[in-house]
Each structure stands twice: as C-alpha cells, then as structure tokens.
Amino acid sequence: MKNKLVYPELSYKITGILFEVHNELGRYLNEKQYGDSLESKLKENNISYEREKIVPIAFNGENKGRNKIDFSIEDKIVLEIKTKRVVTKEDYYQVRRYLKVQQKKLGLIVNFREKVLTPKRVLNPEVKNW
Image (cartoon, rainbow, N blue to C red; front, side):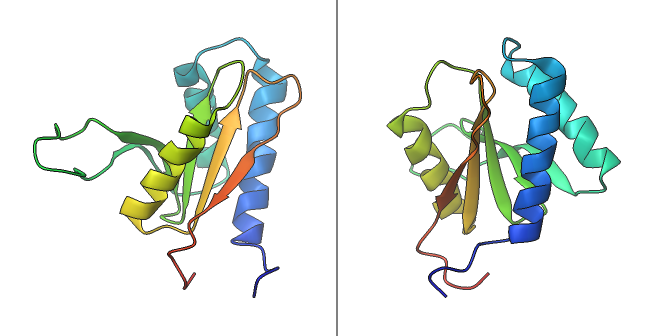
C-alpha cells in the first residue's frame, strides 16, 4: 500500500492537461488566465471539476469565503495554481490545510512560471481510504 500511487489515471490525465496549458500559454500570464485555459481543457476531456471551491470556515470569526481551492477535480484531487518565482513551504501548507478540511487524499501544486513544469504531489496522510 505504501508504494501505491494515489489516483494514478486521473492524476496523469490532469498532469498532461497542465503540460498542454503550459506549452500553449507560456510562463508569464496570471493565475486566472491559466485557470481559464485549464477549465476549458477539463471540459474538453469530460473531467468534472469545481472551480474556486469555497473552503469551510476553520475557526469562529473567520469570514466565509476567505479561502478558495482553485480546482477540486472529480471530488478527489485539490489543484492549486501558482504563478510565482518559487513555490514555498506556505504553498505546501496551504494545500495540506485544504486537503484536511475537504478530507481529500491528493493535492497538486502547479507553478506555471517555471521554465519546465513540475507539478508537486501533496498527500493527506489522515485520509486512509481512497
């Protein structure tokens, strides 16, 4: 079980789409533009998704809608789009937090600013069944 890949077919499909978007649009657009292209390609590939899914409130006093997942794909994978020089630990912790509150096993972080696209997989060890 340890070496088993989480959602291999779906994650490979998504990764392929991410590479298509990167190859077509290049490195210097904003997150919304990459999101629009990605959304179009998810539709073309009949992959269900929810864009800018609102994360439930984490504590009393937090404003509703403060945190949004860029894409929740097939109600299985959390996808966060970045367009910055370097993906940071904070980005990783953001995805971990989203995985935890959504009770999802797999998250992907993709930084379209990179010369060579390298999506990062983030696992939620608290979710056992998938």
